[in-house]
Length: 334
Image (cartoon, one colour):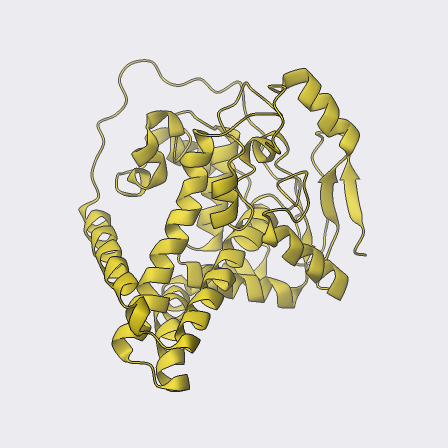
């Protein structure tokens, strides 16, 4: 079955019992009952290992950028392919498939997306999805891993440089993650996360141009390796920072996430964030189909080829009603 499933309500999907697919509703709906603890926040504890590694990564990425004029044409092509492949591992994989279960994917497609996710090196799928579900359920509170009300730097990268707020840990531990625990691809990657992440993110991007067409190890490591990796990280982080601060809110003015076309372009369709937080179960994360959204085009292609199915899509009637009820009245095509 490759048809799109049109959703006309906010009810969670029914239980399913298929290998690699959820056996319980996804717990990603905003919890308005959560209240932040009174008093001052716990003192932030710096994680110096992460600070040093992140600084070295970005220094290496900047050096890789300076090597672009010296790279062979095929190395530039390979860098772009690695960017797209790793991007799909996050957008079509960790985000739309495993975090929100907005469509179903066959075993070969799940393996493909898991490999891309390993190349993206943003923790393993299980941890990424857990943090993202907590982000949606407790958005812009102390239980949100990258709470944007704490400023651009914190929501962009700072949250990775400090210990998590106790509420983030507490709420994450209480989430029902049984759907991912029953997915053999997710758990295989988690069991072998260090090996898969290092090989896919650094070793493979470096060795292919070196062996394949005689690129220098220096260019091969710093360009498709470090530069591509840092660029991909920052594109993803912009969804957490810029797309929660700048843009319009045509679907719900009561939440911070915005429609940001710049972020949509860099993050392969993930910048339509006011829509996504209003309708997190929509596989397209936007009402505009393929516009600035190559991830949606990829999922549609996989459905056409028979590797994916059961895409969840919000009905036009529901979108219009929500705009009229909670939207800003702005036109997000401006």
